Amino acid sequence: MLRTMLPVMLGTAIYAFGLHYFLLPNQLMEGGVTGIAILLNYALGWPLSISTLVLNIPLFIIGWRILGKAHIGYSVFGAVSLSVFLALMEKLIALGWIEPFRTSNDYILAVLYAGVTLGAGLGIVFRFGGTTGGVDIVARIASKLKGWSMGQVILTLDIVIIGLSLLYIPKEKVLYTLVAVFIASKLIDFIQEGAYAAKEFSIVTERGDEIGRTITTEMERGVTLFPAKGAFSGKAKQVVYCIVARHEVRMLKSIVRRIDPRAFIVINDVHDVLGEGFKEE
Image (cartoon, rainbow, N blue to C red; front, top):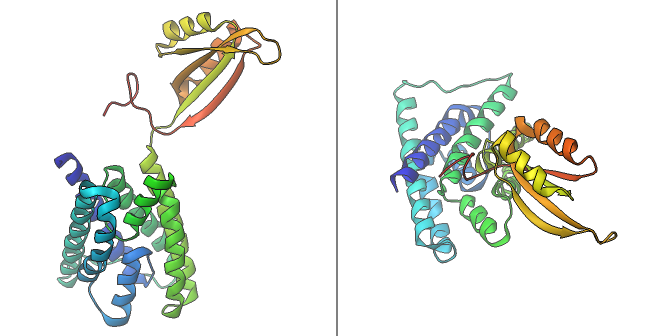
């Protein structure tokens, strides 16, 4: 549990920092429940630390049955953690210990750093099974039931919510906000899928045993062989399945071409690999 709670706290701290240091000082927007809370802050001066938590309560109730007690428990913890760090940032800024980044002519810089900090914070939270509530719960439900990318679900919902902010803030600020949200969504997916990207090889060949032995001895990579049959020729073949690091792609291609120049090779990107020779969890 501690291995999950600490990263969630780190992620919410980064997210709270991005909101108060880059977003609010430049009157930019955010999506989801946080975006609604920001609009309430702009219009009525309500602090984010309170409004985000209050607005999340109905979503906690909805998500309780679908995601289960464990996930909602982490969502509640994430939302409370976010509120605590938002309150801490509000206090530090009020005391003058932190001076937010304000600009009147270089919004691109604010947008880029806002997108990076918000995306990194949420990405860490999602990576360890937590949420900060709000549309994060909706995105996790969509990911669980439909297999949709959480980053893309959040992006779509955020565009709708941010579009409503046209009633309150200039359209230029809304357009800048969309750039920040897009950057954040890409970073969320990057962190979710894993920074380490490997390559998946599926090799159709008549000399699978020899290729498999060579990969095992020369590259020290595990290999799986599947029996296959050519639909047109009727010849018996094998499918050699192997995962390698990106820098090993050229070497594996060389081995296959050396042994069977007529082998059919399919290469796919793999964003997260668990197991011997790669990452262990």
